Amino acid sequence: MTLDEIIENALTRYEREYDRYLELSARVAEICRVEIVEGNAIRAQVTSRVKTAKSFEGKIRKLAKQDPRAVKSVDAVFASIRDLAGVRIATYDKELEGKVVAGIQARFLGPNGASLQPEKKDKRANDPSNFYRATHCDVFLRPEELVGAYSHLHDTPCEVQVCSLMAHVWNEIEHDIRYKHFSGELSPTEQELLVSLGHLSRAGDGVISRLLAATEARLKNRSGEFADVYDFVARTCQWFPGADFAIHAGPLFTELDLLGLRAPKDLEAVLGDTTDLEARARTELAKLDVSLKARGHTRPSLDPSSSDLLLVLLLPKLARKIVENHPPGRGIGGEPRIAWIATRYEEIRSSEATA
Image (cartoon, rainbow, N blue to C red; front, side, top):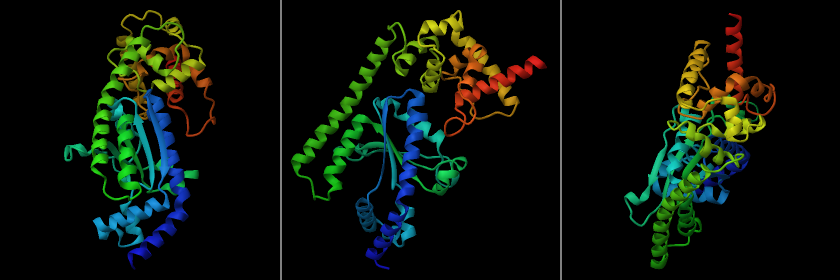
């Protein structure tokens, strides 16, 4: 079979399976947005896309020049090209890229059910004029998720790219100019301007990090109700200096809003004395963790380096209300983590009261 015939057959198959990749990219983007970005109060943009047929054909032809064995058959083409479905997470703060990648590793699987191995790319290490920087992750949904509408996504990869917003600007512009339209070699002026833009993007990363740090410092001095989850984290994290309070803060902030706890004074009314709050929280979290594991509950686990420290202090007075806020059968994707924890807490408290 000639290369043109393989391409024609691959494009026919891709057209037939296009909706599958569209569903996968949308689902992976939703998980990344809700659980990893919003769930951990990370400022970032999450976007998804599926390759166009023209882009797919171009990649096959490029791959044929680099490694003819990778395109010897239609199956080989689909095994070699792993980014038909794609998601990009662009963090405002470069320093949070690692946190996002860690969240992806914990949430998704790699090929054949193995642990996910990210590939960190920084092309400037070998080429001073190339400022491309991003971490690539080929992710697969977990087996328990491959049911119902997602049952046909078995063994289908989605490439997730993580970079800062500033890196994303350079990556996209350089890709469009150099590769997307196959418009030939860049002129010296284009090369020079891309390098200038690259230096500006790297400097911009530092400026944004400092800007967000200054914003957080300003928020710590605010009073009144929390404006948003970032304000909530900035003001409440002071009670837990040894934790990364942003972890799991998104769902907790949403739950507190449902409960009418919308300002530090509202939380203090429930918590009482806030002296040595972190020490108290770590003691309570450790006790609850032991009780959960004794009953065979290992997932989701409590995280002593997160906003779970505040959650465990609120459970004695609020667990029942949290459970009531999440009736069985409501929503998609199973019981929310915070409701699961509150439900197990209520079960443990009930069993201990009747023992």
